Image (tube, rainbow over all chains, first blue to last red; front, side, top):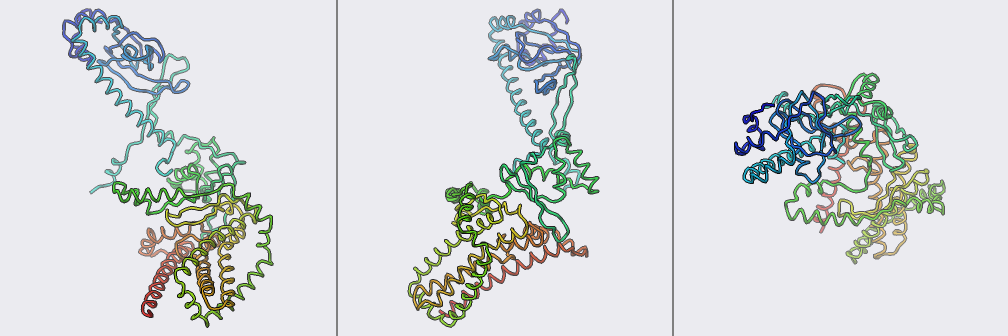
Amino acid sequence: MPTRPDLAFVRKIPLFKDVDESTLNALWPCLRERRLRRGEVLFRAGDPGDELFLIYSGSIVVSKLVTGRVEQVLRRMESGETFGEMSLFGDEQTRSATIQADTDVVLLGLHRDNLNQFIESNPRDAAKFFLEMIRIAFKRLRDTSELVAEVTRWGLEATGLDVEHR
Amino acid sequence: MSNSSDQVEDRPKRARIELLVRQADGDSFQVREVQSARAYLESRPQRIPDQDCELAQLPSGLGGDRTFVLKNRRTEDYLLVTEQEKFLWEKMDGHASLQEIGTAYVLHYGAFDFDIIPTLIAKLRRAELLTMRPASRLREVLARNRRNPAARAVEATLHALERLTVGSRKAHDVFARIYRYGAFLLFTPVAVLLLAILVVLGARGAVNLWHESGEVTAGLAKHPLIAILLVKLCFWLTVVTHQIMHALSCVHVKRRVREFGFTMLHGFIPTFYVDVTDVFMANRRARIMNALAGPLVHLFLASVCLWTASLAGPGLVKGFLAASAILQLQSFFVSLYPFCFLEMDGYHIVADLLGMPTLAHDSVHFVWNELGSRIRGGLRLNRQEVAYVAYFFLSVLSIAAFVLLNAWVLIHAFVSA
């Protein structure tokens, strides 16, 4: 991780794209680098969580346990995307899904305390941050709805269930 | 203009899901994309346990095709299956995948019909084969026009009327008791002999009435409204007897009466019904006897009415008995007449004798979709197809003749008046 703030990267992240440069410069030292090798699990669904992660490079797979060693792939995420917000701001402080590296990955983790400090000391930037977060949440909700429909269609096709004529 | 490639593009893509499969060490994983079509082929359907189902063979059709009836003993649902479907059903043991079953089918029959397995699975799942609930074209049209308040109102009314259905699934015990306490006598040679004697007496009465037609019409004309209501009411009540006879003959051949009740057919025709589907598990003789039992009630009543009418003096009673006899005779012939696209008792007998349980449906389908191309191609029809064509055209001719006869009667009545 570069010691000087990589503003080009941070601006790529929707959550921070409208945040003042000075705030980003102040936030940069708070980011903690994590490196994962391909296949390595960062955390599993149900683990306690207190960090928001930014994908600096590489890609990760988000999955949810279905049965035994089989998990449903919910989405893939790449450089410039964020994850882990749900356990910071959601009603449960545990991870909702399992994250594993699809390639070698570099992540930047932002701890809950640092994020709270950023929000309290920069209310205007915090508003922009949360506005983006709502947009991301809505997009993910829409993606999830589409995934539910696709999985349902898959189930109907895979089982040959004739619902129309029942 | 669309071409085949456009059509392929228009078709919705098969759904696919991504599954992450973790290795046993837990440190590595593979992501596999699974298409629904692949999952379908790898599914392993399992039929219900043998003790929960029963299979009976129907007589071979004209084309030599064998047909079977599959009964779910637990739900009492019946399924008509072809020999090919029976082959597939027997392979559905929970171990063989659909792909393996399809391969077995190809090896056995030398060809594959891509619709047969999904269609069979849908049929097996649906399970409810014969429902006494009518699904009429009228209801379909109303359902399509729900935006129209009038259609909505009619549909709601029909729905309310249909809810008047009263049925009992425990009717079998009642009919078994009735049979035990005397109804078994109806299925003896003595009963047949008595019916034959009554038919002779009735025929003689009919000849006498023919000469006394003036008395009959005068009796009816004196009290027209009462006569019409009485005849209709009595006729409606004989419908119950018709259904009861079907039920008793079902008991006679040691099969189960599934249901007996009252419903509003198509939402507005009050009628009684009996579900004797279980008789399909018996032999052909039993099925034909069951089909005949109902119409014979009308022959019996017609004979009694004709005989007593010939003995009665002039007046309303004579007119009522004579009119009832005509209605009963009409019901007897209509019930037994097979060629009218309606699947009544006579139709079931013909279909059974031909070994073509779906004759009406198949004949319409064949004439509508295939006959033209077969004639243009100069191809000869096989015996089964000849039966389809014969059934279709005899039915069309019969309906046309029936309409013309009624028109002639009406015109004749107006002219006479």
